Image (cartoon, rainbow, N blue to C red; front, side, top):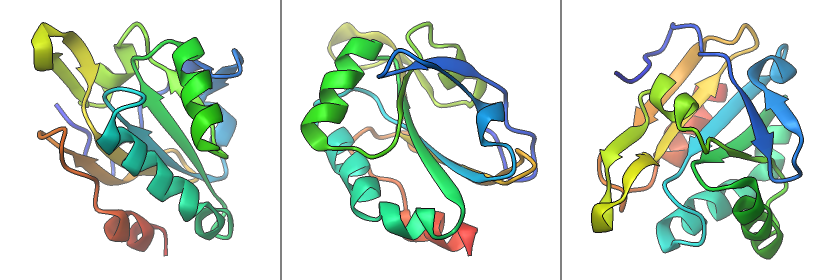
Length: 153
């Protein structure tokens, strides 16, 4: 079940594309935008994260951090981040626990693949409560970037 505004965000600790542990608690006292995405190097996932990259200054100006999470390995995410110049961490949910905790998880995906993150966006406030939640059923859809920005203002 997906999270809803007002709920406490599930804690997590994941490895980043830099092979460093990153936890939700690292962002306490700041807002955090979490973007789940199905797979690195796919067209829609690249569009999703490039949109966040291109408006990164807006989020920085609002005391907000951005992270991307997928079930890809940290090594795949490192190459994806490098090729697209993402200024924010990409986190590997290789064991699929965080995607499930946030309700952003496909049991069955395309081509017979199992256990892939759904495209989703969450905004977490300084007290680590959800203030915006959007989980998309169709992997071809993009999050509502205007609604994400409006939730921060």
